[in-house]
Image (cartoon, rainbow, N blue to C red; front, side):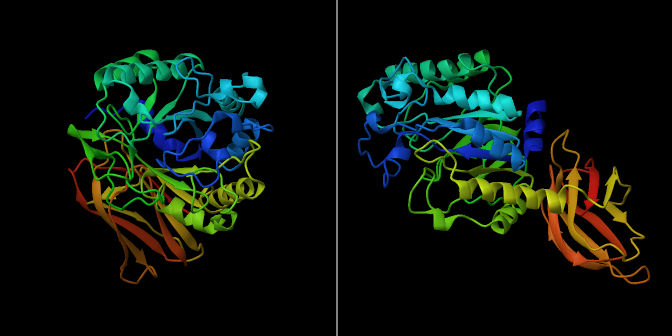
Length: 408
């Protein structure tokens, strides 16, 4: 199995922020594929400050950020030569602005990995022949991959693409030739894959290897791959419960820091990345409450998980069991973090955690889990056992290895 170093590095990013921002930001009540016109003349984020966006990502502990460059409506957040429906025909900066440029520059300023979202499908595409649409698609992607320096991550949304005939070979050849080190999400030649829901939940059985990729929440169609492929999973969700783009009416649905931390445990804590959407408003700023909430959430992650009181690298394995003992019942354990050696793929499919109440007491089965992969985070609820044992009960083969166990 081929595992790219950049895929392993992607898993180390762990937490990213999605920015849905574009023409739909300025049309309250519009939803995906409603086909309602949204004239470009209303786009005017007169206080746009991508530094504020990306500083928030940094302050909250995020490692990467993704900007919607073109959503299904077709509006380009950069002055594309291949459409008149873009920032160049808006009152914002008298048509001289470029959201993509400002976003990319801010990411580099704050040391955040740069991702660009692009919807392959859009309103009105039926007016073009298949060949014309492929040319348009490739031309726009080429602008994004040649005009802004190194892009770390290209995020394709499969929504609306079902039934379209794309020249996949030509598209991928173009992308890989322009940016050989780029990661591609979701379609055609993927390096990462979608978890399959928009609530941020991964399963305890979501392996890092797969041979099927689900394209969209709007279809059951999956893209079949010829063999099992190493494909890290990503869990996307909204910081507000209703909309991907800004709305005046859903601030009351802002998730709490505790709820976000819980989702972190069932995404990053289940060997996946967490991608949290925050919606810039019509001024071009992150709402104060949303930015503050993200930082509060990041602080919870750091407070509870960043500094283990005990961390053991390459723990000894005896017949599939890894044991940490002599804890003397002095330290309350809130979280157990297990990391598998995935340099050759994830191998463990089921594990059990046993706790020893006292040195002389028999162990008790505390938890039964599935995948470990990059990282499994298990709440221990403040218990103070004498010892902890992790037993592997099912694996692809016997070559599995735990590289670190941490107690927080």
